Amino acid sequence: MMKILIADDESLARERLALLLKEINPEYQQIEASNGLETIEQVNEEEPDIVLMDVRMPGMSGLEAAHHLMNCETPPAIIFTTAYDEYALQAFESRAVDYLLKPIRKERLEKALEHCSKLNKLQLEQLGQQNQEVSYRTHISAQIRGTILLIPIKDICCFLADHKYITIRYNKEGVLAETIIEDTLKSLEEEFSSLFLRIHRNALIRKDKIEALEKQQDGRILLKLKKLPEGLEVSRRHLSSVRKLMKS
Image (cartoon, rainbow, N blue to C red; front, side):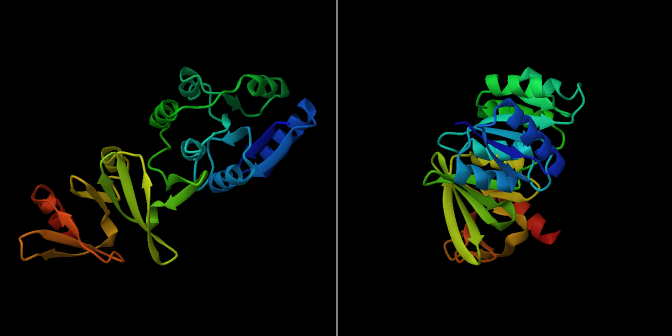
């Protein structure tokens, strides 16, 4: 039987959707989440077929949660729920994304359940570009043994490029850890320009984790970061921007 996850930070909204789903089909299995992080956890544990997700949720928006869900081996179909006005909804309609306008009617929900389809990354990127509330993600996600690993941006020391993969080095409960993702360094630099700085063609570092610049005997310049044991090389091209940041 179909399993449906209701993700909304408002308890009344979740209750209303739960009642509507029960009216449509009492045999639907229902689970709930009150924010984006809980949504990811529930998808990892319960593997729902469909996620009914509010676009606006505190901490992690529905759009960001959907972005992370794309890393699932078998991502659920997503139906966005929203209180946006009709003009703002044109962004959703133009990308053929399923959505429900609050207050949600039973007939509209039933139709969406019948016709919902899985999102692709291009649709999510385009929706994010048209939604002014979306800036950068609060977390980076990676797939580890079939589940989604979420890494808070605040814990990341650096992104290091190695061919087509990116290694993330981050602090996990006081211990240095790392994992691999498939983003490009260029896209990460554009998204997190306010938090991270390019220091080499293959490295982005967290600005607030800079400790010192050290010149080596062979002439190389290494940048020391908090809680990172080894220094990272700074290219001549990016040295001035690093020094400017350290003086500010």
